[in-house]
Image 1 (tube, each protein chain N blue to C red):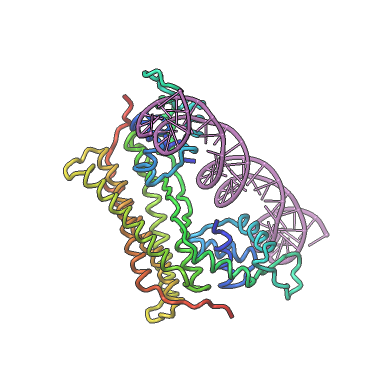
Image 2 (tube, each protein chain N blue to C red):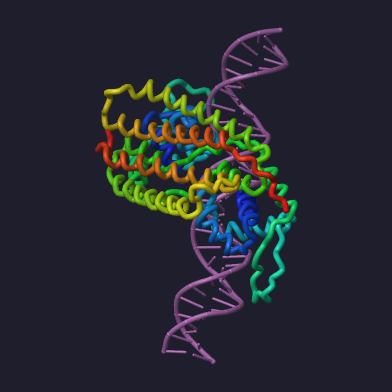
Length: 182
Length: 182
DNA sequence: ACGGGTTGTGCAACTAGTTGCACAACAGCA
DNA sequence: TGCTGTTGTGCAACTAGTTGCACAACCCGT
């Protein structure tokens, strides 16, 4: 229910083509709302026929491509409505936690390698976020917009920090649980 | 791809009927892998025809109900296989973070109430986890099984702690961003 | 000028998850 | 003893997300 709103947000920040959007979903926006290019193209189609966005007339003759979209007033209104509307948090699903719990019953054999791999992935992600923070939020800029955006980035940083710490601990004290077959 | 494995884990911990499972998914297991009773019944059907579980013969004549299922060796093997297999972390989707980002463009009007509501929800969840920790993991029990389960619960506690802190900060310093319509 | 990689756009089919309903059995009570 | 609410089980339809492919255009080396 919120991919269209993610796209509207991105397009308001800057009008873009499908591919531009795809790229931006692979960094910034995608850090907390991921989407593939297929999803994005499909959704762009729907948003256009709903009258929420429109294709910018291509200035370069545009050999074959549709190119950039921009948000129409109706789209902005819809986004504002959605932002203000109460929403229940979606239930979480975390396969790694589930696997730990399963391992308590069927044994921890083979788990450690993947735990370490995940730890590494989270460390990288954390480093990337910290890089962005250093680059885009130097101390002192406290425009309202920047403060909000920084707040979102901080959430990412702190979540990744949590995961690296938790996984480190998990690897360290992974108890060897034997397969509990009776 | 992991609902069946969540069910296998739950059934290994204790053979249960569909309704029992539903209840357990509303607490413990569901904290990191939620499912509705409809999903569960459907999945039980599949697992049974796959030969991973079987219905226990009802000892009380069981007026109408199918009652409890137990895991067969093939099911346990499948669960062990899945637990050990490498899996990429699924991309996150967090609507609240997205809304904050949208608010930076279309304005923060109406957002604060829901932010507070979420804060309250996370506080409750945290309290519940801490209750469970006090009840089920008194200091001193360090069987391998208990250590693993405690580790999973700690993840829940720390995540909820993070969210309550983050939301508190968000509410406090919610900058008033005007609707940026040109 | 042509063959092979890369970029940009998109459809179709499938899988997972959600929502909405159906309905039997029993429990309590009026 | 029939009405009403609750418990337990389940199907069907819909929505969202993923996977896999297609295909045109351009760019680059030979």
